[in-house]
Length: 205
Ligand SMILES: [Cu+2]
Image (cartoon, rainbow, N blue to C red; front, top):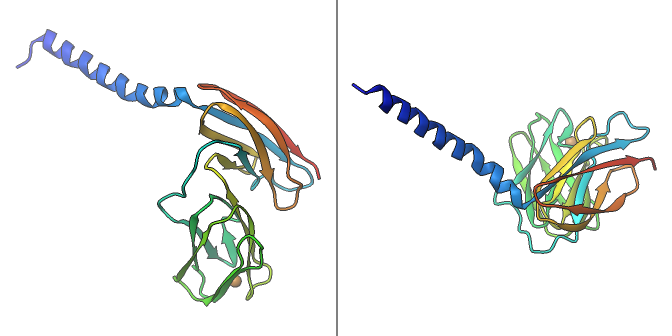
């Protein structure tokens, strides 16, 4: 049996613990900044699949511990565009009943995984900055792109062209874009701790 004041104290204690738990992630973001905005791709159905990334960020950045993945399903590479940090290994899965053959003629990473069937996964490590086109020599209409970047400060636009890059150390950087059909765009950007820098970009050519 608890007294009323004990119940009230427990309640207060709970409130305190919860507010501390909620506050921690907010404080964690105080030392870094965010870049958020929209890219408009002209003469395109969607403004998706634009890679927005930062260069000149000091430090060395390793690849993620887990492999990333591109699937082949219904004769389509999914995702169509995959931005990665240098050194990332990508698993190429086949979820179709037909054979696929993933290869790339790109200078950045020339490779050929050969033909393979359903539920087989083959992998490649991308250890040089640049872009790599993925093709399938069984289905000439299949294509995808891997964009290999120097650091993890990048984002890919959604269908409406919006993007957000979070947890960026404060500083002055160059922001660049990559799109499979448009010319690269770049501008200087300043990131401040605890703030969001708004950037709107138009890719015309
Ligand atoms: Cu194929």
